[in-house]
Image (cartoon, rainbow, N blue to C red):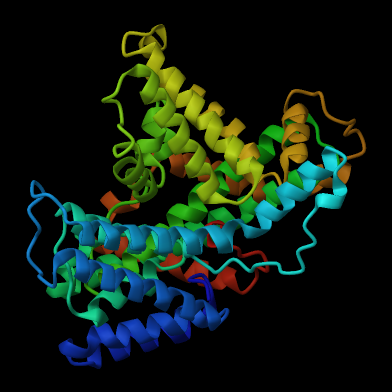
Length: 478
């Protein structure tokens, strides 16, 4: 079930809101948990069993770490062997689930390709089993795991109520595509939060604007990107046009989903953190990662980069840590070498920016030029993110520089991608990306004029849903 569907908008969401607000306060978390399990199990009921198992393990480990107390552990006090074992069990359980379901097929395919290339085909694995990737497993395992880590560090109070913890893990607004909500960010809200008309109205605005981003911008940009990337050959202009279309698709698709998730949370009384901060305004790759998918980048920083030593163990170790974090970040996005290379390129760029230092000539370039350079670098990396495999990535990059196959016969492709509707959508996406205020800021004060704009965008978005057969959410597959 996706947010941008009539099933969700006209049936599931109204039912959830009605049941939630009619339910006594003491039973709201239990009801929200059950409804979230229904939402998650809509695609495959077995996915619910997996998430429930992970929830039980992390809940019990949290109790062991806290010694059954809800007060904060003293961060300075030594942790017992029992506490360290409980944390290890939680981390290994989550990583094992993620590793098996996300990387089993990748591991088998990589092994078979390697032994085949070495002429040892007889050593290949004849794996009949092909593992189905459960929706959102990359998100809820990181989210659930952060709970036990925060409790172990003394950054969050352990929770004794299993229903409340289940609600935190399974909450449908951010369950399958984030943002990755850390327990310390909502722990107090699980105990007590306010429900106001102002909060509900802002939530409805977030939901409406996120839907408009998704349906009116991401989907048409995605059609252009798919057409260009799937073409047998393309001109340099077509290749650049397709890459820009994909850059807008993934941004408005994912930021639109995040807006809808934040809006749904507000409608239920929860305040979730910001997940995008105009990333294409960035003047460097370092700044880009402070603005793009903030919940993931800060998670990797706090739970991987800093524990590895961060920048506290010398320059060489800092570069190693940056590279390792970005490689794992790439692999988190998808079980394919394309994603590993995508992460590696970002790691190299982050390291290069650090090596240049704050006094580099690049820093003295005009701000608009630095923004343009950063955007072009990001465009190159998106090719690896979007292309189906490594060979397709290199072929596409060659096309961008006129080194690909002859595209003289690609009149049909050009006739499709340069239709006035698609060109207008991409131009509108560009204007909104670099000129319009962010949803986070624009919805702080909803005037009658803004309410009219929001309502109009909602109506147009819903109407467009009836005409669009192309309606994927990119981050559902991660």
